[in-house]
Length: 241
Image (cartoon, rainbow, N blue to C red; front, top):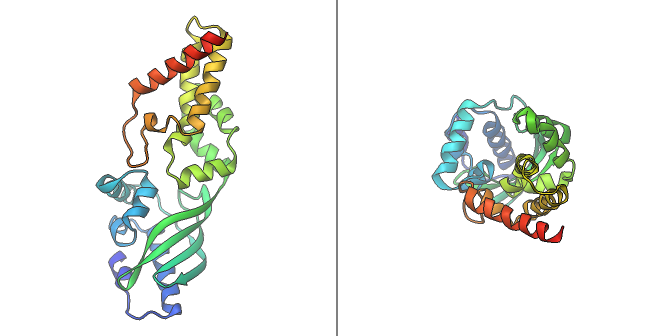
């Protein structure tokens, strides 16, 4: 199905492009065929979608498409074409409906089109928080919800668009670290100061590389470097109180 869509009839009229784009977008969001990850999506889109790089991103995409639930309804509300580039706005009821409506850029590929980049989305905050809580242990769930209350919708949306796993994981990191600090002999004021300092570093991206992301790749969590940063923050707070 994906190959048929990609190689659909020749020509280039506006009506043909509109129809092909709607068909490609719908297939990409509803298909259980892993080939959509290469036939209907560019490498850039797959890497953005999976927050991984290179072949690992493709393998992850193929696994998700094969195993995860897909949308049953896709409503492509608007399509605009400019030469070899296009934009589509849509809503859907799939597992990513937490962020809907969304806007996609597409790129012409041969006689067809491929999804190329997610450029805008709108977060359904209640659904987003419900999905986050579902993945958490009860011990930190309430704490993480309080941390997320400090995030604006715009921050969450920008983090998703930028593949910022560090920003999105910051609440869980803080809620695991704070109890550990409170079980030490550190004065409560020092702990509060350290948590505040760590929160700021997580929110402004300074600790992104330690949580497994940088400008060029998605890496493993650097626990040793993270603990070093935590000691530095805690030391500065201890010197002040």
